[in-house]
Length: 217
Image (tube, rainbow, N blue to C red; front, side, top):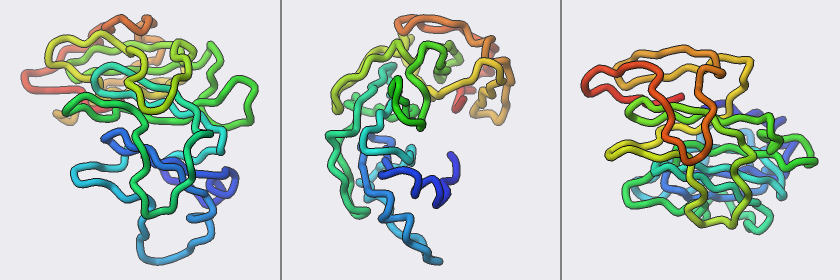
């Protein structure tokens, strides 16, 4: 979703690769920062059917937020993760149901910690959208840290056949774009996303055509 500069890597001790199937791998940033090669090299080994979802620069004491398509999210500390070489698949970051996938992953900053990642302060917000068009925003501090490998806490109540497609940090003074499978988008002030607690389903922001789904936020 974004480029990572060598300065980003050198300013952090490690990088974290999170896959769509919920694997997370920590690797010393120096393994990439010192390389300058014309041909692509392996950053993480992926199992068959898996794909890279997020690539995050962080420290040994980072904290990661990983959301799932079934309406849950897990915040966990990375201190217990052993750094692995580039040719490693990592370990389970979040427990997913059959057919589930990671719907968002990013770093969150501990209160009082060094800079890096979304703050866990109460003024930090997350936006959530589902395939069928429900949306809302939540405070980051609603998600207490837990141990790695579990299912996490509920992010929303899903209707039958619906899935969370994206959970992402948002800034209230800014706008957000909601993208659909038909190539349409809608732009809203972030404050237009209703502020609701974790168990709430959310609200529809606009009507979708038959067969159209939300694909990203």
